[in-house]
Image 1 (tube, rainbow, N blue to C red):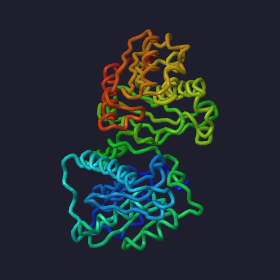
Image 2 (tube, helix red, strand yellow):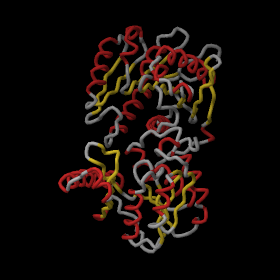
Image 3 (cartoon, one colour):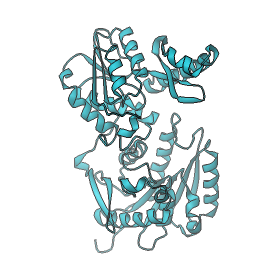
Image 4 (cartoon, rainbow, N blue to C red):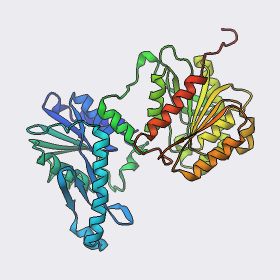
Length: 430
């Protein structure tokens, strides 16, 4: 697996672009996944960062298959061979284009938040994405940069198909691609963590508000053993932290998750420490039975809690997502640990149904108003919990909290709950 996550890929890509340092460069990320990569490139080159907005035109009812792409300024690229192959008629193409144009306009308003596009006239435009499969979006981005007056256009990606990279070389002045594996099937196969990048992270990176690890604050990679099983984690302890929040995830969303990192950064700014830990090893995550083995996850979370309590001496809270919600609720009933507060965002509290009545830690359940199935599960869990509990419903949010402002709202609710309940407690013998 060449890349841990997008920001790791960005740091590697930046090393190949060092020759552009000190030049009149603008780095342009393709939202959403290209922006974390572009952020690292811009930071390394000392260059300004902006987005270049492009939307794929997908086959009706099979949107993962691309027909072409749209760009700002009315640009459009359509593959006539794809139109013929899929039998796409003009009204169908117009409907797809209208929907994607609306989404492009929404993203422009969301990501720039009133800021103007950075001028490209006479400058070097470095267009960055997390990878290229067909190259359609990148080709439209190149055309958009040239239309904006860029003197030179460079496309830079961590990974791509050989065919796409070769075709891009006909459009761009230079193409930089770290990995061109053969056979190539999908960009995400070359990342250990390829979780979708939320709108909030894109907006935050573009605004320059990204929070970097602070060594003085005790930010480090750690390994916690649950029996003989090593669990990887990221421990961050701000100065004078009032408590520590352990993030409990199900499979597929671990310590590298952009949503988890964003929530953790919100907690750091509130003076709370965090431990983002993978309760399953990489090989175990491929086994769906393990992902839903909540008793196993809970037992490991108990071991993690005992370790972090010894390490920091701070009162502990749990932030659960996915099947990690059930693991957090189950672990909180174990006599060997003391849990000061729990936040469960979405997820599956029903998998802990047999012990919900035993939970005594103050518990907040957060669900999206549009995620009706999970909302019903959380309502049922709320009725079964016996301690202090609150059900918070985020308006307009679906299960992944991808809607504008939804992730911010959920993170703010969690911050306020933990800040209220994670007060320092005296540890015997200290």
